Length: 175
Image (cartoon, rainbow, N blue to C red; front, side):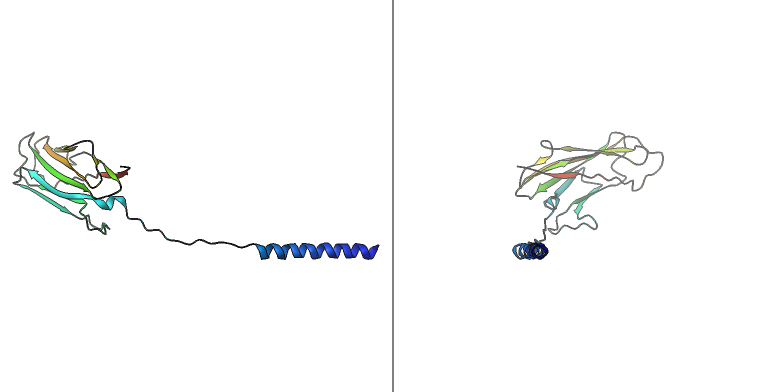
């Protein structure tokens, strides 16, 4: 009887060992490695052209933002410089018309406009509006933003290079 118990225990141990080895022989691991590269949507939305009214005394330049990584080389920065001969009387204004182009072939672009007021005691305000629609630019389309700089008060001293910055947020929209 004792031998029989030993044989049963040994047999059970051998069976357990066989199950473990059999399980290891019948299992496997699968691995997935990969990389993904995606071009940002905003690379294809940029300033195409710009003009000002009045043209005299106002400089408008389109170029890349310093440090911007746009592999297509599109221009994503508009610079406006108004000299001291243009805004002299309260209510005087400069209007810059800038064409924003959407070269995306899969998505419309929704561009949110922002406004600002002078950093020097509210001397001027900058107001942005769309020439057409609400800022949705069609697939491979364009729209014009009107940027108006209006003198609110006459300064008591000379103001040189009072800077403003406006950021337009661009979001992809299903066509």
